[in-house]
Image 1: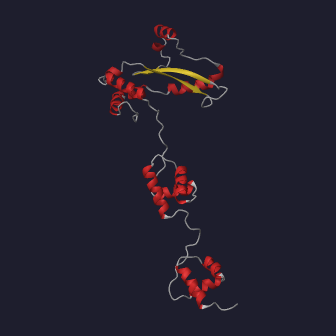
Image 2: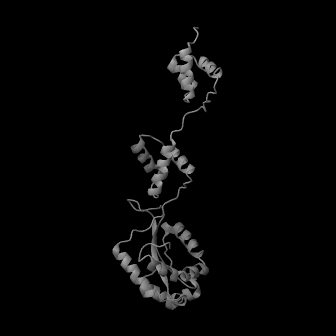
Length: 250
């Protein structure tokens, strides 16, 4: 094998000092890897050692861009950040790589809290209700019967051809929820429920299992839970007024 010329030795050292790997220098100069390695070891000055492995996909400027992107768009997603990175730097990075970079910047993923969209009429109605009841005390709220109704599906959301579901109406007071206690099943109470077309026990064979689970959850609600909820009503009213009828933490 012919001896390596001084020009090629100097060129190899130049490339090695610039941080290029032995393999890439050997390909550029047409030398073997062992020859380039020997030149590196016999050099009078220290040649920086290659760290090995593939270089990082994201450079410091890319990480800085992601940091700035989420400062301006805190509710954005990693996939949208990947698109922004590709549009700005033409760098195609997978979501996992971007997540690791964000973890390095001490970002933590959070699930966005979904809140109902409020229209202008909702703001007005909430403010009106809060103003009308802002002077009520906890003792006043103890006298209120809280009722609501909901549809519970057996298979999650509604499907095209329908699925097993039940409509449930329930109410609670300061003393708790209805549990077939004698005073809750008295003639007057039963008559009132019938006159208002309210069924206390929904008897249907198809939804037996669903009903049992709903009844078990309903029975698990303690009077203490009801009291805590009712005691917090004044705070709800105050929060609504402060938000001018908008969304609150409640």
